[in-house]
Length: 99
Image (tube, rainbow, N blue to C red; front, side, top):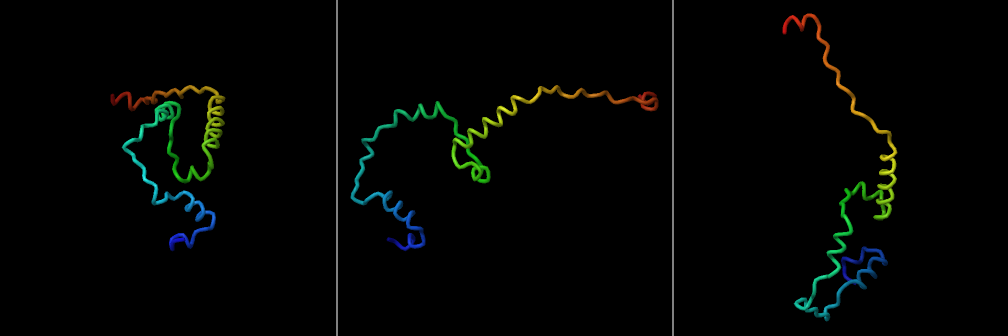
């Protein structure tokens, strides 16, 4: 255990130890191939970055999607509104004479 992990909870320490790459592994990245499925992932999904205060409300992507579906359904059920007609400014006798 190193000094930086002494203040960490036991769960985090064991996770770090399991996930850390051992020094004796030697990967030859010159033989690596691109992920053939990566393009499909980008085509089928849309990534949106949430600001931290919004992300704190939604624990998962499913929670975000559910909230957006509820909001979209509510917006679709709103009555259609027409833009308010603008009235022409009233002209008084004084302004009509000046013109």
